[in-house]
Length: 487
Image 1: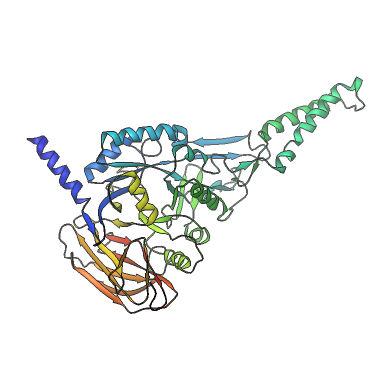
Image 2: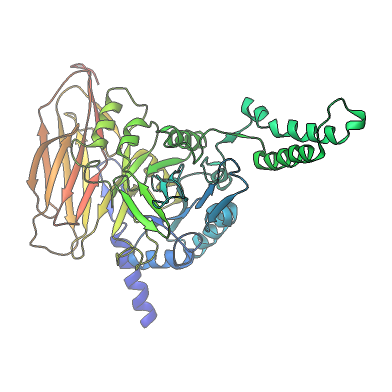
């Protein structure tokens, strides 16, 4: 009896996270996804199996297990940075093995076919040191928390993601030849010791100085590679991040800026950790898939007229090759480490034909998803959101539609449970709030927008908020205004 009740309750929870999302053209289900759950493979407390079980109990349909790629920091004393050094490395995906980790995820998926578990990595492309360990102010580790969430790669491709920590920014070039200079000292020193057959004659102690110096610096310079970026020459701008984006795109993966509004300033032991927000780099970098609006991304980046709207308008103007999507990111390590937050407090809801890995990744790549931050009692749900032209043809989130005249925006928002709090929606058109009003649970809204500018591309998106922290951000729908009479 108890087992039957448990099965029934589980089905009810799963159905609530996979409700029908109809557009009159295709039927999709809503798969509630939890992105960025760290397990004990890296910086989390629970095993991957335990985390997925917790997500299942919360009713999630998809889970992105997200491990730190390579949490490794090194500081060396000039000029022997590779010999006189301190290295701190913690467990991460590369140490565990991406292929081994993928096998573990496959086994979880086999045991829980109603869930979709995917692999992702938390990646810090770059960091640099400032200060000195020999003065009172000590060392500062800069920019480590400017990170990406990367997913959709083959397991072996995670090994090649270029970061300062894993040394993938190194290469052989002309500078590699210059790094061979200690061998000259070594050879001269050896030659001098054989002065009976050599024209070069130096005292033995000088010969040994040359030999020892040459040997030490040869070891220090090995393997004689140049570094495109390293941790000793200050901030390098957007370039290390762009290199990572380009690599992931080349391999067919996806890159999301992680918690881009988070400003970090803390001291751990003798070292200060400082990282700025990512808004500047979001504007300067190209080709990334998106960013997380929750927890840290909804103020200056995700709000109307912010960084997100700036890059979306650049896409509409033809200055970017692809749009930028938003998603929700849990950054969950344990309940205690996450400030008591529940594992499902932030969700990315995917609109998919079926809850499979292929469909989840496809929805993520195409922006067919929305981000939501829950408040206990009435989690918000986007029941419908389309843009419709005069002949009835519609487009949904992530899509583009051609229109030879004004369009109509349709949407409906509901929430489980009841609340006396006001739920307000902002309809945003190309960065501008064109309508803001309180909404009723489950009501269907049709808003006719009389804007028409032939030859332009615009977009619409929704910003829905209740009492903090209850928020929901849709992804945009694009409209290509064509000349009158064309389609």
